Image 1 (cartoon, one colour):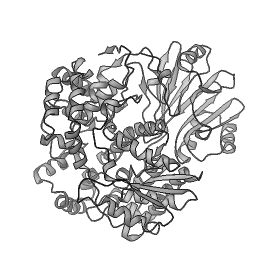
Image 2 (cartoon, one colour; image 1 turned 30 degrees about the vertical axis):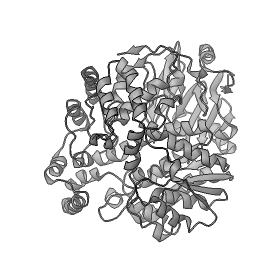
Image 3 (cartoon, one colour; image 1 turned 120 degrees about the horizontal axis):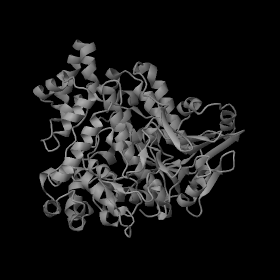
Image 4 (cartoon, one colour; image 1 turned 45 degrees about the vertical axis):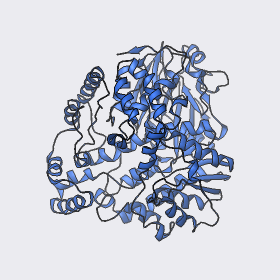
Length: 609
């Protein structure tokens, strides 16, 4: 594996080194020229990496060191007080659960280290033993020197979708991921995990929760706008992006809001965005020309971003970069999105599985309405509600159904989730490896929440965050970082604390967000109850870029590894109007292929089974 530190990550990144004499040699291996560093009380290196001055707040008191890296309004004085009172690294749980924003928290106390990311998974921590010591980083590839790519990790990313906990498997055999919501404690060559975050009990009513959600989201936006300057907002016209734009407009920053028109003539995004902008005369609203719209699948062959995992976010990378280019020309220093609103302002209908057992009459009435709203077929709906399997048992059963036809949507909606599937171009050898990996995980897998409803709330948040994490890194390299305030831990907690029967109802669309934004967003802008799907952009992209797809598969690295059938994928590229392709079934395979290509072209990548 090539020296990852030399690959030129443009965004901030860091490694955490233990207070051990053997760490000095490791630091020389991992730290590229130009890395900044902070020291343990002993004078040995503790944090090393690249970051701007406004991306880190650090403090020291006695033998304690604290650092917050990312977007957080914490002051040096506040961190100094926390460092002065620090007697045990586990005592940082309270600080981690209190601070707003999106950030990593690192600490050194008496030579021992603690480092953690966010509960959302938007900021992750990885670790690896190198020689005598355990080293951590915010990117897996920073630790992957001389480490072979893990074929199992690659194969499970071919699944669509990849179920929990398999996203926690890194792409390198020797590198491990700290589960979101846990912290890594390192003492020289010893490491252990400690859980600092759990999802809140959903016990509050919507009336009680509205001010908490409003304050949490307003604070999350303020974290990004408080420095002033020009702040860009993605104003799609949907409820989520509209809320972020109105909150940003209350700050002292100059706001530029951008909207992409759609190819679909019945798409209403631009009309709703203009309606919102009409209430914001101080906001510059830019509707990009339709001819500038990058389509899905654009420039797949030109992607050279250093990524530490595959992502289906590659499909829209060019659209993201085109938007950033225009906004950067207007002087923007950060771009805010409404991404995550779908995941936190709504919740999983699977909550009605346990509700049916606690409040049967109420649940039946609601389920009948959901069935009418979403056209759920009755027999699969009853089957899903009667299912009492544990999460591990469900995962083990799905391991045997990787080639089975997809279940009706209601099965996944009311169950543990959508069953993972492999498509017909994935080889039997890859299927066997995926099956074995799923069965191994199922033996010990625990759900993310206390029931399938809470699991169904958290898994989409974690899956979405893995995509946005890569987008944040791409945007930072492009010179204009994006941020998604809905995915801040404090916002997630405020939303998930609402009773599920009040969050997800067939009678109202995103009621917690609608009520939280009332008085901030005009009522006419809160009235939208749908969102665009961008299906035409995807189908047009398939037709326009089928030549690139042909080239992608003709020189496929996945095929060279024996994981996909090159001939079958080539046939699909020649038939872009194949109905199945409209559902995005190629995305996970393209994500893996592009990731393999993004690795250093001159390196020989050993693959471990």
